[in-house]
Amino acid sequence: MPAAILSALALLLCLMLPAEARAADEPRPNIVLIMADDMGYECVGANGSTSYSTPHLDRMAETGLRFTNAHSQPICTPTRVQIMTGLYNHRNYIRFGLLDPAATTFAHVLRKAGYTTCIAGKWQLEGGMDGPGHFGFDEHCLWQLTRRPSRYPNPGLEINGEEVDYTNGEYGPDIASDFLCDFIERNRDRRFFAYYPMILPHWPFEPTPDSPDWDPAAKGVLKGKGKKRYFADMVAYTDKMVGRILSKLDELGLRENTLVIFTGDNGTDVSITSRMGDRKVKGGKGKTTDNGTHVPFIANWPGTIRAGVATDLVDFTDILPTLADLAGAGLPDGIPFDGYSIVPVLKGTGRSPRDSIYCWYERNGRRDKASQHVRDTRFKLYADGRFFDVQADPDEKQPLDTAALDAAASMRHATFQKQLDRRRRELEQVVLPDIPE
Image 1 (cartoon, rainbow, N blue to C red):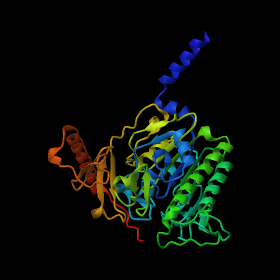
Image 2 (cartoon, rainbow, N blue to C red):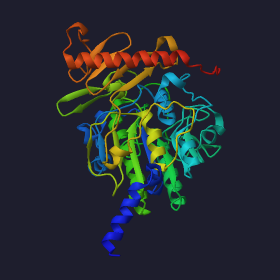
Image 3 (tube, rainbow, N blue to C red):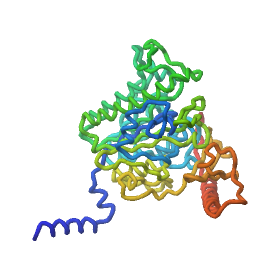
Image 4 (cartoon, rainbow, N blue to C red):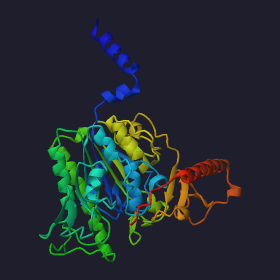
């Protein structure tokens, strides 16, 4: 039989296989998920920033897929809970600094699928020394696992179950990134998942090892906001740490088999004002406005992801389903995951089915105090009735008159209201464990 016919038959047989079987035959990549701490959309040069130097992230965006409509929660713990569990906070957020001990995380899912797992950076989720392993990580190098010492110069970290204090001028972010690089090298012949919730560029704002006035004898402090002039140095060092991870993957010949995602956990600190050309952007950490939730999101996977810009809506409930999809892992039964896999977007084969984002936010988990909204790229409806055109009014200074909406806006308002009503019914069914502080 001619080779051309055999080839055509093979293709036909492949297409006749169930989608699950075809997916199982596709190569499963290594995954590196990097999440900066308090670094909003406006801090990356590829997004239009003119205040900061981010050459590695810019190159990552230039050769990968840059998302323009990715949203987090307004502050760190709510985002950490959401990204790790694939659930909106109304389902499982208990209080600040805590992850429900019964939660299933993306590390559980990937480890079950045969991945070796690691977390390095900032924890802030309680659980003690057993916490990282309990939540699915084989190895860890963390700040704020069992204590809150210095995070920058001469830090105190927890590394694979041991408290380690540094006193010879070491820098916390260097230790975390070096640990990840070592993990990657040791597991180069295995499938691995490395989660890097970065320590940078969260306050206290202070010199980095690349700053002219870096003091290796300093002991970082937790009080006060530090000096705002150092924020640019810290963003540059964040970029440097990303570059270090990418260089290690290149050195080991792993780049074409590794998906690297970079994002941020919430908007920039409110004390920082950045520029995007002539436009000033004030940090919005802790706010539900765009400057509090709009974050950078860049995916890079040479040979698989084509360079471009994606306008698809993305939120952090999408991460777990996406990673499970890439790993060929099924989602655990009995969990009402809220996200969607964006693998079709990454591979250029389709769009995300998501047409809106829901946000339930209350820093301390008080159910009767939470802010709730549903939004898309243009409109946002809060549970208290305020309706905004966030393209025309990103700071949400003037709610729209709902009695005077045009047809398109009226339709979105009605759709969003139905979604809020559905989420309210879900919220009424949630029973959270009582875990004392």
